[in-house]
Image 1: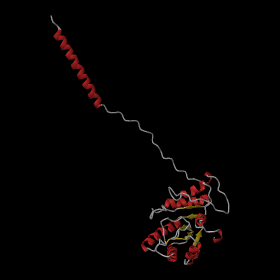
Image 2: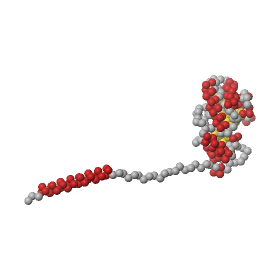
Image 3: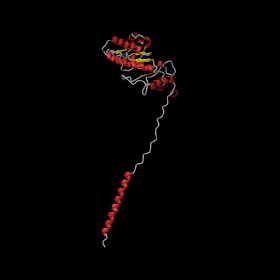
Amino acid sequence: MDTRPAKRARVERNTCAKLISNTQNHKAKDRAVPSKAPRKPAHHKAETVEPVPSDFSSRAKSQWKIGPHVSAAGGVENTIINAAKVGANAFALFVKSQRKWTSSALTEHSISSFKSRMKAFGYSPSHILPHGSYLVNLGNPDSDKREKSYQCFLDDLKRCEELGLRLYNFHPGSTVGQATMDESISLIAECINRAHKETQNAVIVLENMAGSGNIVGSCFSDLGKIIEQVDDKTRVGVCLDTCQSHHANLSKGSY
């Protein structure tokens, strides 16, 4: 008897059984719910520790007050820490961006932190000299541009008072080639008188300049003429920039 057809039938049945089994396995895998990935451990933000004077080297105790212009990055209150890091017993700072007409107001946190750090680190307001914006030109004869400068200037002064600082140093200005030196000097004095009326006790400090034609303050007589026209002379002073006086070829005798 020929059994070959029956053999082929068994092969075909076995093949179909394997295909059905594989198909069922794939469907079972598709229905399987993937296991959840393990949770990552939570990272807790480290608490900020308030710096204290003992964290830094002791500052030199001297009648001479020496220090650099320090960064206010991250908040004006950080200037005190940056000064302490280098052992300064005095320092200069910007109370806002020196290259923008407007800046965000000082926060209550920055103001309170600045004052508390001033006390903790033993810095005196009389040994801190804020520097004004580089954009300000109170000698500009264009009334609109001068008013823009004045508002920036006044904002700086009010920030100083918020921080408990009295001194404020700035570059007097320029004629921009459109006024005489004496005309610009009078405009600067007018702005100072106006600012005195709009602030409480800020002392405006005039900085001498290197000078280049239209710049006011390259000789001390310029600063003297401004002061002559300021009504409240108890609230105006002079900052001697020795680098700029050297550049302007001012001799020691002219100091």
